[in-house]
Every structure is written in C-alpha cells, then in structure tokens.
Length: 382
Image (tube, rainbow, N blue to C red; front, side, top):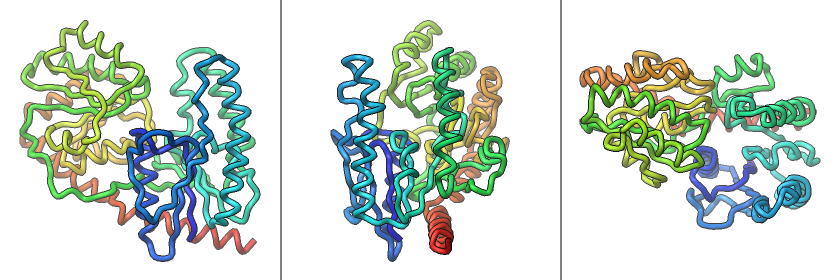
C-alpha cells in the first residue's frame, strides 16, 4: 500500500504533527507499505523525526514568509500560493502514484480532492467539526467561520472518498452518524516502562496558550484549590498568544507562588511522570493526545467535558472526572478530591493507565490498514 500524508508542516510542536509522524512511522513498518509525508512549509529544525524509510517532501510553498508586510500579502498567500501549492502537490502525486492520499493539514484540504488521480482521498478531522465557530470570538470571525463551513460542506467534503474523525461523540453529534464518516482514535506511540508514583504535590496541564485551551478558566479554578492546599503546585507547559494575559491573571490572583508558566517542553513525558494529577480545561478538542499520554503515565485526569474527546476517553469517577465546561467550582472540587484522597488518586491512576492501553499504536494501525484496503477495493470495483 502506497500512502501519502499531506499537511502544513512537522517543524513545530503540536498534536497534529506528532500523531501524523507516529502513524506514518508505524504504517511504514507494516510489510508491503511505502509511506510519504508531504508538507507545504518546513523551514527550520524538525521537532518530530520520521523513520529513514518514510519519504519526506517539502514543497517549499512558504505560505507565511511575507504576510507581515501588508494585507495584500495575506491575500496573496491565500490565492497565489494556494495555486502554487496545488501545482506542486499535483506533480508529486502523479510521480508517486499512491493508493491513498490523506489530508491532515489546513492548506491543502479544499483542493486535494479535486486533483484527478487513481488514488483514494481521505480527509482527517483533527478537531470537532464545528471548530471554526467555537474559535470565533467576534462578528467578523463568525462570518468567516460560517462561510468556510458552508464552502467546505458544499464543495470540498463531498469529493472525498472518506472522512475520518477521532471520536464517536463527534460522529454522532456533528455528522449524523453518516456512513461516509469513520471513527479512528489517535494512537499512543509507545508503552511506557514507568508510571508516576503520584507522590509529588504537582498538578500539570500542557497545551498551547490559546483561547481554545482555556487556561484562564483553569487558573481561576486553581485559585480555589490553592486556598485549601497551598503546598500543591500547578505547572502549565506551553507557549502562545495568551502568555502575557495568563501571567497577569496569575499575578492578579496572587498565585505566583503556586502557579507557573513553564514554557514549551520537549520532555512532556518526564514532567508527567513527576506529577500526580493532569487537568484539561479546553473549550473544544479533536482528541486530546496529551490526555492519553498523561493516562499512560498513570495520572488520574480532571477534564472539562468539552466537544469532543474527553467523553470518549474518560469514564467519570473511574479513571478521571468529567466537569461541564466553565464550571470552575466543580473543576476545583474534583482537583481537591484527588489531592486529599491519595487512595482515590492511586485507584483512578491505575484505571487511567489501563484505559490508555486501548489506544496503543498496535491496536490503531490495523484499523487504518483495514480502511485503506476497503476503500482501494471499492475504488477499483467502480
């Protein structure tokens, strides 16, 4: 099976990049497979390394190299460089002659299924379907979100052979259980030899410091926790546009001694193993990889039940707690329960570790191989 992944880049830290590299490497290990990863932009150092047997192609479209100059340059990147991207990707695909082409990125998703070829096309949704509306924070962004969703629904998605989403919640709620939509969860790339002892007085959160991740809500909730347990720390790893906003909120709430913004890390597993509770405060997700990694380290989870992901993973009260989005008092209460009850913490941590095994790469890759085989067979039959 000749498989091509298309995405924007793999040269920065992100769940999309990590999961795509993980799957590409795992598929390349399967007998009879040949795998390509084709990106639009990849200047700089790679964060996630592909196996030598995975073919890597950088189309060097460089969408954003000069968009800071003017609004015209922003428009140029959308119109002119999109055409360049399509032309270069078309040339590569016609040389490769793949069986399956998968769109994971944002830049190629609308034009990829219009490239004529004998291959099967798959669109992977990395967020819940209505992520644009969830991200919109003003009139203009709402208009853009609705227009983009309409264009995608009418002109892009119908041309794909298959759409893959990451959670059953998303398929049922946003796709009306369509038979054109399959669910395949994100994989964990390795089984750890160690687990957290759950003895450090440390709560951990990891993610981009952006509106989506909703760390303002977590920090406000933790101000309640800190009053009861002043010897426990909250460490937030990540970087992003809201860094200054979060730092100011921490200072305003007099939490500098117990809440830290630790910046980006390339050693997430190390920090998870040194923690005792993982918290996810997102407004929305596709499927939170870092939650699975935390569970694989034996950490109990406290999570907002945002769309989509946490409800597919967590059984409330068994391997973690699910809290309605925005209920900061309840979020704080669940964190406090795990802090004060070490036996509960260990019991939930053990259950979380066991649950994480359901997402092992060895269980996920056969699902992709079966999907590829079915789609290719259907394509060849007519």
